[in-house]
Every structure is written in C-alpha cells, then in structure tokens.
Image (cartoon, rainbow, N blue to C red; front, side):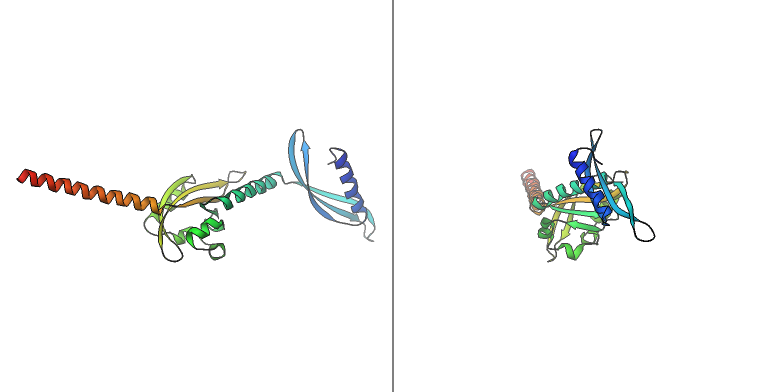
Length: 212
C-alpha cells in the first residue's frame, strides 16, 4: 500500500500499532496503474498461544464500488434536499427506504410514517394497475396519478419512475420524482369543459339557424 512517501509513513505507523497490540479498521485511497481504488484494511496483531505478539496480519478488501456508490448517494441526497419536487427511493420490492422533505410537504406524510410501506398504498383509482404494469417492465416511465394527501385532500401527481441497477445489472432500487400537477390538470379540465360548452353552443346555434 506504500505508493509514495506519505503512504510509507502511514504503513510504518500502522505496523507499529500492530506490534503494540492494537487492532484497527480503515479505508485507504490508492492509485493502481492510473486507476483510483479504495482499499479497506483490517489490521490485527498476530499472537501465539501465550499471547505474545509475533507480528501482524492485514486483511484487505477492494471497496471501490461501495465508496463510489456512497459518493453517488451523497450527491443525490444533496440534490434531493434542494429540489422542490418530491423524491422517493424504494427497494426493488417497492418498499420505501427514503423520501426528501419536499415529498413530506407535498403529501403531508413524514418519512417515519411511511418508511417500509409501498407507495401504492397511497395511490387511488384505476391508474394503480397501470402503475404496477409499468413497474414490471423495469424501464423508466412517466405517469399521472390522482393521490390523496394525509388530510384527505386530492391532488394530481406527475411521477417519473427510474429503475436503478447495481454493478451486476440486478435491480436494486426505484427512484420516483413527484411533482404536484393539480393546477395544470385543473386547467386542462376547465379548457375541456369550455370547449364542450362552446361546441354545444355552436351546434345549438346552427340548428336554430337551419330551422329558421
């Protein structure tokens, strides 16, 4: 692990700790042929049956994938806490693992109330079946769903669902970005109603003129 002078000093200090009987678990970032790697090292003193320290043992694991995942999650968390959209992360089985504060504001539910539950328990109407069908494809999709806040007030949610896969290509999580689309849906409904009224008015006027 001694790739430079600082690393050599670190390794020497760790070896001294082992001779002193100390155990330690730490992670070290190293550079191997131009590639950055994270190595988790567990240092243990090696003793004989009488308890005398004979040397040290170092157990090393490559935890690069885990560290990169942690960094990605940290970046996602920073973004999620700043956006006004609600964000939900579930397990592959659809159980809620995390939501951001905007989700709590939109729905009225706190993370403590819904963690471990399925978002489908909050969905209403026939769109639930369509939602489940889309999830089975394991592909990103968008959907409009009529939801109910904790206070029973209804609202239209636009949801963008993205499946998340691990390094082995196995489905690990789902991430949903939720925006309150109630105002837009109400506007579209009003436009549709006005269009129908206008069509009826035109048809009535035409019939009256024809009869006259």
